Length: 88
Image 1 (cartoon, rainbow, N blue to C red):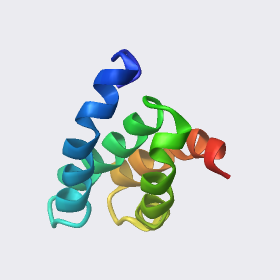
Image 2 (spheres, rainbow, N blue to C red; image 1 turned 45 degrees about the vertical axis):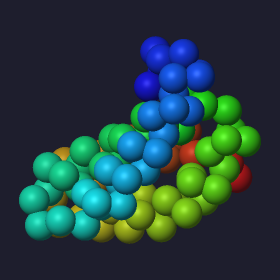
Image 3 (cartoon, one colour; image 1 turned 90 degrees about the vertical axis):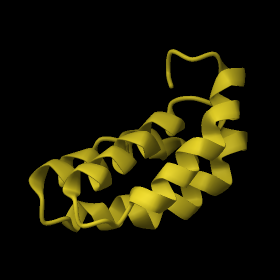
Image 4 (cartoon, rainbow, N blue to C red; image 1 turned 180 degrees about the vertical axis):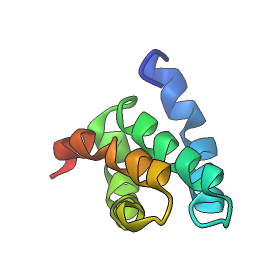
């Protein structure tokens, strides 16, 4: 997402949010990790104003993942936290 043009980033946003909704809680940790990285990627793309609601709704998912039983999932949920500073 950071390399995509901001217009393209806004166009793919619905697909990424669907991925987050679907893959945020499955048993396979790979899907939870991928959802966390996708969440971090969207925060680096479009403008803050276009993402404000999505990021605020997704913060419980991101913070809850810090307690994930799998170490790599915890790392994946931790990585986007510095980017979330823009929304505080």
